[in-house]
Length: 295
Image 1 (cartoon, rainbow, N blue to C red):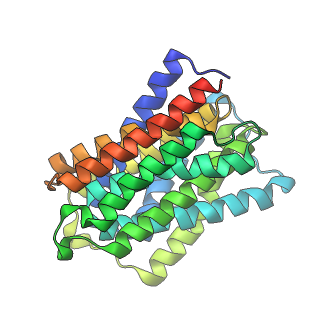
Image 2 (tube, rainbow, N blue to C red):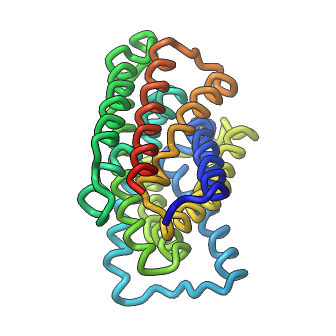
């Protein structure tokens, strides 16, 4: 289905909101470690989604044949979010925003093999190359930061999370073609919630002495805006539009993320980060253009 102007605006807004997610995670991590952060975030999101489903009269009961695929999606979701939070805890907000925003590149790659009629083209491959160049500039140049300010492990973990996110979005896109998007999103979170809580109880300790309004606002932003509204909106859009096209609007996220990190986290905006952001954004634009040209 060809994208409409209203849908393009909605997708752009969602990606702009996602740009603020690394900043919100960084604030939340001041009190709640990665696994506890995930548990609280998705507890809030589940409540928001279930209220929405009740208002809309969406049947939420899990069918027997759905248990295995939904459980596998929930496991993938848990691993991807855990890695993302761990990577964010080791990296700056700006670098995290750029690196996690590479997920549409991996989505385009996986879509080539998993979604019929959504194959790689010359422009998409060129977009992948340009964005990869931007990522390399940030990683190899350490984002223009001092050695002690840049973690290669943090960058690698965020990139691994972006890879899994790209795969998860394509897998979710296939599933929402068969059922109501709200069910896919909610059960993905519900089936991962126990793993977040168990991991938090076993391996992490909440830093209550740091409790203040910025960490609480960060958790609420992740739970209500990103995991609640954002996930449901994206699930709905994937039902009608190509996942590659929807994800390719992600060039907005790193720009917003870098600017918000400089503003709210008082992080330096270096030339390496600026060039890397431009290259990643340009690569995602090329992928978006390729989809428009191919229909």
